[in-house]
Every structure is written in structure tokens, then in C-alpha cells.
Length: 402
Ligand SMILES: Nc1ncnc2c1ncn2[C@@H]1O[C@H](COP(=O)(O)OP(=O)(O)OP(=O)(O)O)[C@@H](O)[C@H]1O
Ligand SMILES: [Mg+2]
Image 1 (cartoon, rainbow, N blue to C red):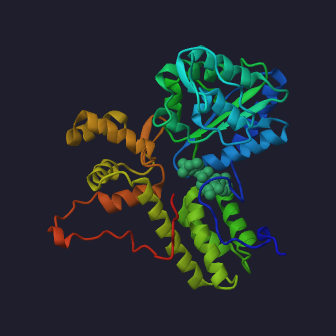
Image 2: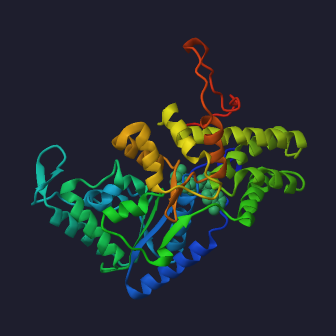
């Protein structure tokens, strides 16, 4: 019987671990040194990778985890969710440990299946969590992705906030009985959120602001997808040249173009034709716009216009100060709503803080916002409201969620 893994999939996921990973060499080298140092010195730390949506955080975390495993580190069996920092049972679950008999003392509620609700204290939670982390022969690597949610939907409950802070602090200062590293990925707000959790300073090498891929790495990713996955016949250079004009080194965008590449090569029996490339570039552009639309999904048209007007006159590569953004939004929405809109724009990755200023993180995302929303809107009667189609979506392309 034919194994399914031997069949080409023609599908390239635009989120998560990379099939053809390239670049990020400095980060991986630094991380490798940190692994070595930590296991030799029985220490540990928190390693934070933050960046805009689609910058490649999850893929990079995955590579870091692979490096750790290859260096003999224990890694979690299951995905770790933020509550593992203040819930011993959640932590045990992600480490693949059997759960312990239930709790005996304290003041926070823990449910015992079916029967009792026992009370535990923050002290108990902290001591138990630290014990779990300390117990084991190998050094331990924990991975926490989407960590910006620690400031929103995954905020530690107030009665266990001190436990979460002390657990993070113990890891960050290497105070456990074995080397423990927590690698964290999250949007540009993550470092600020860690500050509210008591972690205000990171080792130079252990704080990464992830940016676009360099040109060489971007081309290598495209080359692999076109030749290895797409099994294209001939020289892929013209296709790589054309696509890399559109992707700005942005990993998510590269995958937006890779999807139509695979489809087109299949349709054209692996031949790279000029017409095929044209169709790929158009379809990739559609997917890219659809991605921006998703990022902006929770914003009303008025809010999008406000954000677009804010950035329309800021030259590419420059940014805005928080004070100016808030001042401008406050005029339209009042202070509370302005603050919320500003926060939401950061949480959705539309605004990204880098070196103290805020920008729209991807040049083509900025263009999308400005082109579609910064011009004065003409008021149409209700029945004549124009339907904005982002360059006419290709009905064949199904984004399938995010
Ligand atoms: N260095 C890389 N080489 C090759 N492909 C990459 C690289 N980095 C990321 N990718 C691919 O780009 C896409 C987006 O990356 P990823 O999902 O890691 O981004 P992210 O920053 O975690 O995005 P989000 O904020 O939406 O979670 C994925 O398909 C991923 O496999
Ligand atoms: Mg991710």
C-alpha cells in the first residue's frame, strides 16, 4: 500500500513549524550557547522571541526546541498553555506526567473530579510548581507560544498572580535544582506583559525582536518550496525573483505565494510558464490581502479609517509615538475607547512597537490599510453602498480559518 507521506500534499500551511526552515542563524547560535551555558552551570532563564504576526515566531520556537532536544534536553510532551505557570496539574499535563492525588490545604479553589472542591494557597501552588520543575535528571526546556495572551484572556487569576510571578522569577534567575529554560513567543506586547508579571530585564541575547527574513534566506525558502515540494522543471530563478518582490522577507507572505505556486505547478505539470507565474502573483496578492483582512476583522470601518489616517503621512520606515497616537484617537473616541483601540491594534498586530515607536509592521500591510481606508469615504445612500472587494477575491482560495 502506498504511504500517504510519499504523496505530494500541494498544501503549505502558513502558520506554525516550517517544512523548509532557513535563516535566523544568529538567534539559533545564541540559543545554542545559552543551552550549553545553562546545562554546564545548572542555571536557566526566560528566552523571549517577540514579533509581529507572521514574522515566524512559532517556526523559530520549534527550531529552538529541536536544538534543545538534540542537545539532550527534556521537552514538554504536550503543548504548554499559560495556566501551567500557576496550575500544577496543567504543568504536569504538558510534561506528560501522571496527575497527583489531590490537594490538601490552602485558599484557592481546585476541583477534585466528581466529589470535593479543595482549597489551595498561592504558596502551595508555587511550591508544587517549582518542585515539578526541579524534579528530573535532564535539563528542561519549556515552550510557551502566543504569550501575549498572558495580558488578556490568559491573565493569571488575581489570587495566584504572586505564584505565577515567583515561578517565572525562579526560572528567569536560574534558581531551580536543574537547568530550566522557558522559551516564549508572542506579539510585540509580550515584553511589556512580562514586565507586569515582574520580569523586567532580559539577558541581551535572550530577547529577540523578530523581523523579516534576509534576502538570501527568503530566496532559499522559495527555492525549496518550488523545487522540492513543487518539483518544478527548470530554473526557478525568475519565479523566485518575481515572488520575492512581493513578500518583503515576511514568512507568512512567502507562504501566501507558495500556496498558489504549488497549485499552479500541479496544473501545469511542473512547467514554470510566464502565464502561470502571473496567476501565482495575483493569487498570492489576494491571499496576502485576505490575511490583512483577518488581522483587522475585529475593527469597524471607522476604526480602520482612524488607524489608516494616523499612519498615512508617516514615511515608510518611520513610526509614531504612543502619545501622538493616543492624542489623535482620543479626539475621535474619548480617552477610554482610544486606549482600548490602541491596545487592540497592538494585540492584533496592526500596530507593532519597535525601538519605542509604533509602525504597521509589514510594508504591504501598511499599503493595504492606507489604500483601502485612508481616503475620505464618499457617503452613498444605503442601497448604493459599494461593496469593497479586496481586488476581487479568488473564490478558489479558501483560507480555512486563520
Ligand atoms: N525561517 C523560516 N523559514 C521558512 N519558513 C518559515 C520561517 N519562519 C516562518 N516560516 C513559515 O512562515 C509561516 C508563518 O510563520 P509562523 O507561524 O511561525 O509566524 P508567527 O510569527 O508565529 O505568526 P502568528 O503571530 O500568526 O502566530 C509558517 O508557515 C512558517 O512555517
Ligand atoms: Mg505563531
